[in-house]
Image (cartoon, rainbow, N blue to C red; front, side, top):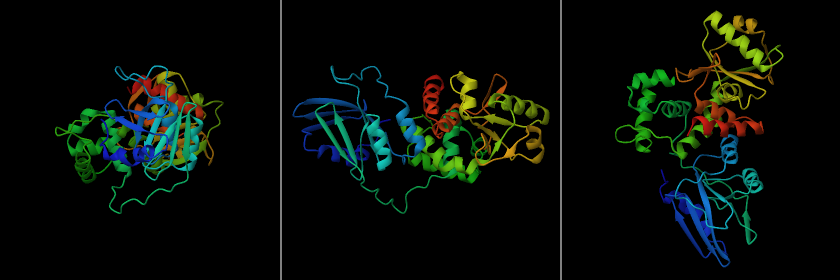
Length: 341
């Protein structure tokens, strides 16, 4: 879904004002912009980011190059180039984009535009404008319901009660959110739901900024020689004690694709009591590799791989992008190609 034109206007106006830009033509259908300069023309693929750029969303941008679908051809002889349009790009994030060769523009006027060896213009340090007092707040329930729709798109037609149980939130909150999503045109007239780039941004940013901090129960260290051995013990104890759990992050990605495991074991598990902690021989540790996350609804229990229950791919993807491990970004991109196309 191409964004409304007004959402592009402020960042693009800053680009148009650059002294070497003679003409700027935007094609929102193909997500491309063509810039005319005294020395020729350049085409850049455009990525629009409406959410605040936290680490998770920055990792998502850095983790993959934009795909060019049939009909989206770059000009002959022009290297691949990317342009991010955003509400606000902090200086530290801008420096990461510059190092990765990504051009950008935001509403306050932070700009970086590099057109081959001919032109290079950078403005950083302009501050974010204050948000309107009545701006919609993103709550954990908002993100939970979006994860539910992204995982099971047809659930947008379910009853409010069924959605509340699946997403792990209250019926009143679900009813309010459904109305909000319809106002925002995230749901169509017949309640269809489609995962768009905007939805992906909201899932990734909302998980890292809003939802995950509310889900973390605590960190623990285990005596096992490896994460795999710990997860095997967890699976055995879960069967013995009839506990429900779901791996996410690196271990879940490894179970699904055998590409990346990571050094941590984030696990959705209801509040662990002394019995399960003793059985797993876990000790509280602020830097421990085992991270217990509070499950929400039925959504987190997705599917078994190699005898291990894992969370749905969108949750695993968001958890990977919340990681500080650079290889987790690669794993997120691999998961996106394999499960989230």
